[in-house]
Length: 172
Image (tube, rainbow, N blue to C red):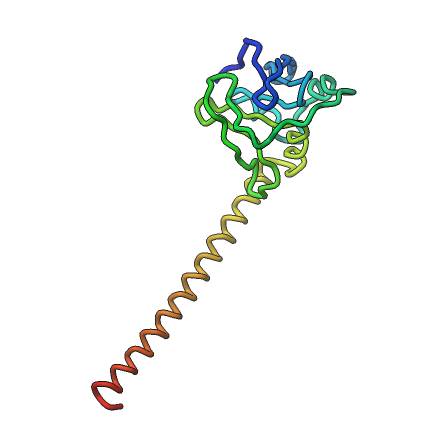
């Protein structure tokens, strides 16, 4: 999805969002400067801002000196671009930061401060990928261990059952 040119309302607090032009990416981000301080990313904009080495000076300048109201995080948020419900998702395998995503148009909404926290989680996209692989490997290992334990229990039950049959029918 391309950058929206229309003024949109914040999915968290409903106030009108401001367009902040990002020089390096050539896109305009929607930031709730008069309300909760949230940032709305259209479709593929996020890829330009997710790593801590990518420039977000214009965002920092736009929010500098402002105080923001706390948004109600329990409320279902509606995508201001396509009108679908947004879904809460973790930004990484660490499950420390939950953002709102629109599965229909690919938009993402970060509450105030969440973008900075997410960018601080990993030095690079490769580090993020490695954490995911490591976690996946650990989960698979735990499942294999659980299956092996279940197999051992099943073998023990089978062995006891066969011994019982031996006693009943063969008198051993």
